Image 1 (tube, rainbow, N blue to C red):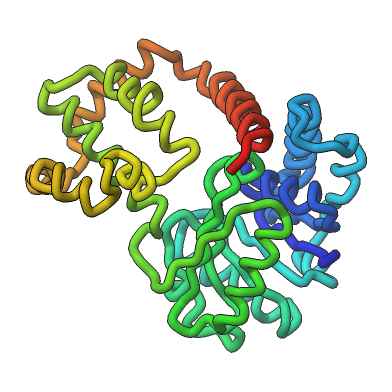
Image 2: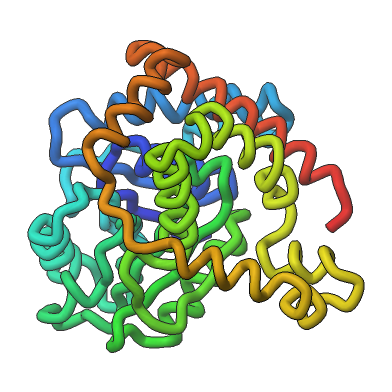
Length: 309
């Protein structure tokens, strides 16, 4: 089993450590902030216990956690690694600095992957001698529960590196998807942006309340979307499949999208949505509600695992 280096020990870094460790890999985790890696180990142990209780890992949590060790230095973290998963701040200048260090310190055959949510690899790897081994492996938060990983190479990324990373992600239980070219925000965020922007517009225009818009997704679209995507959804929503659906509903759907002009997140609407959300959930309760979300995702993951595809 390849050794994995996790650089950056925040929520995403600690989640990646769990993903690789539960698949049997030895993981070294490092963060430049004092105490961050040690704090991540506490998160790892707690979440692994939750996964075990939910029946999502068979091994004892302590056995899995023992595969994750804290590195004292970046050099120590990278020693012997076959794959590096970087999880630093979402600032391009930080990514450039970090990847310059990774490229200088890691062996020439080591894959360098970034968990960035929206910065393309071309923005921070162009000047690197080893730029062909760099790519984005964008997870969905939290990656130890939501398995999708978007693989996005720069124009100069070696296709073999993308293929190797896709194989690794599949072997550790993730669901890798590959973008054939860079786009702003990557694919999942672009899909999410369209829905979130329309949700804000509907509140702004007085069409529906914040609570009811949320209900439209969690009690409507989200139920189907938890096990099928938009193309399969419309394929099943008309007797003749996709072509029939477009014949029936294309003019309606096309007309709707013509009304969906770019949305700039105006301050008054953001304030209205914030007020509604804080009325439903106090600021101090976000952490507890996030833990509830993770438990619900665990239950959903366990259910999906038990069902035929």
